[in-house]
Image 1 (tube, rainbow, N blue to C red):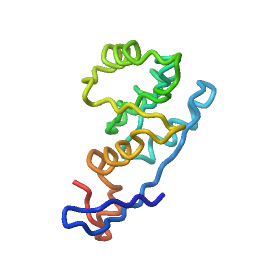
Image 2 (tube, rainbow, N blue to C red):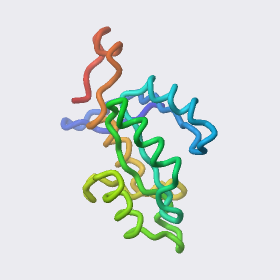
Image 3 (cartoon, rainbow, N blue to C red):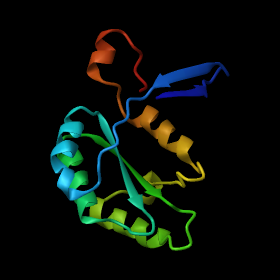
Length: 139
């Protein structure tokens, strides 16, 4: 996907983000493992109405063990059933993230989705092959 934003001089910067959406279900652990090997970072999305699930824990440790930069995200914050404080506590206790690292979004309404893209750009290095052919680093 192409993400555009103004730079410090007000000129438009363009970033190409290669995103892989992996299945969350435990039956797809092989596909998740293969996807992780092709990535430099991971967005750990936790549903605010359900909290951390078993497959979330499994996928987190696969990404962690692979040395990926992990960006924690809580989604569905707009729903009445959302337990945002409980989900934050789970993420802090289970994965040792600080609350200020967590991005709170509503994918349905687009709330704070730009923060996810900005976090990808600032926290995850581009693929090594991209640097080898002269594409600029985001760091």
